Image (cartoon, rainbow, N blue to C red; front, top):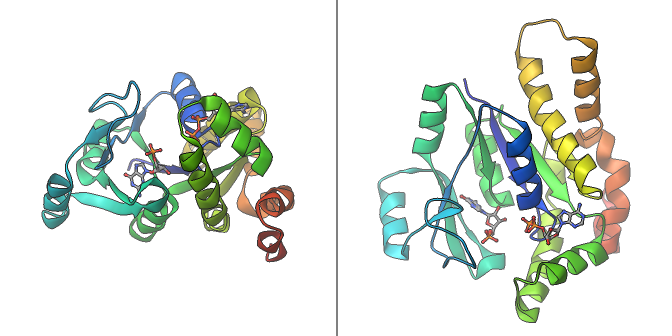
Length: 232
Ligand code: ADP
Ligand code: 5GP
């Protein structure tokens, strides 16, 4: 059985950067290329970052029950995004694992269908740094940045539905932690006794588990909205 990894994050947290680093370090992992109705941005290519389709094509795929999950992502003008079932089938046939880069709505749908999927929520160090990263990336207009920050606040509320919380402070360290989570989950499902190095790696991954991350998350939530931190 393939392991399904779900990665979600507010836009600008560094998810794409970390996922790219992960694929350089880990073998046997496929990336699920989503279908979307949004237009390509910058150098994006059809079939690489996304399959870009019309709304009519997307709705025909919904009718034909071709999606494992799909959602309208409102921080993005309500465009449709969906994960096609065939990606998981193909990864399973090849004996590989599959990584989904999807929003909180999609993550909830996958967790209902595949409870053993491993979900990872990436957080920025705080709101100010998120705003700086969004500006510094230089991809979005002021209006889009404002909307992404508003959406971030709402997405962050869902952090406690995830198995792992990764605070993307120092890039190299965060990339190593993401790799450790992916590898640790494979090791935990294997039957072999773990070497000392493997045990160290599993422990490193465990520091990101939800119950161990709550203290670290509280000031981040408070930087977005003091009310958010109260429930933690
Ligand atoms: P996302 O995919 O979550 O929208 P990106 O991967 O595009 O975010 O990252 C947003 C910006 O932040 C990019 O300019 C990226 O180079 C930068 N970035 C990512 N991770 C870090 C980090 N740990 N420290 C500083 N800058 C980062
Ligand atoms: P962007 O348009 O910036 O690439 O992505 C916007 C948001 O859509 C991100 O949060 C991304 O994770 C999410 N997304 C990308 N593909 C899918 C998908 O197939 N399903 C869902 N539910 N969300 C997706």
